[in-house]
Length: 280
Image (tube, one colour):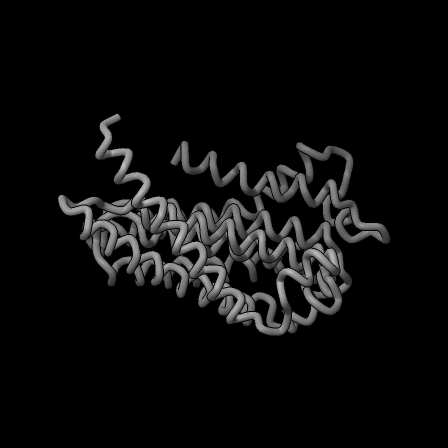
């Protein structure tokens, strides 16, 4: 590897690190009701830790998507493009998480549940939400095509994620909001896996170079429909094949919820989304 390539890599890394710091500032500014250091180090708040970990992972994913974008023949132009689209990605990440909170978790005051009640189930779901919207934003911001197609696919991906979250609530035999309000970590972890898995599918639908509205939208619709069909099928596989003789819903919502079952369901959704990316 040439010296100039190494130097260029360090410059890109420096820009990404600055964007990570800006992303942290944005998170702190939008969540003034708690001090992260206090909640993590003094209170040992697992719910906050899960949500914040998801935010930083989602932020890193979207910045990776932005950095993976097309290169020009000018280092200065590339750095400016990375900075501008990185800042836009931070805005979109926080905006999409807020929208999903208001629609999918409409019955909660999320910060109160996570900070005051230390609801780790909601913290896990919130962390999964951040990772999912980070994946969607990374897909929308990657490749050639310009700002308008990127924003269009981000908006379409966000709408699809909301639909997936609402659909999951409908296909389960329990009330998602009710279980999470009861601090059910198993249900929260399982739902986080649903969001991340579907977010990854939407990333696949949105990434790549923009060719035409017809071709790009048809590809997006293909992956989205595949993901929506996948939701109930994967749950059936997890229930009947991976956990034979057990009722997954019963394991998640019994008197002492089975966190292990929630982890299995979550990982199944994420793994299935990866297989879809390799095979479709």
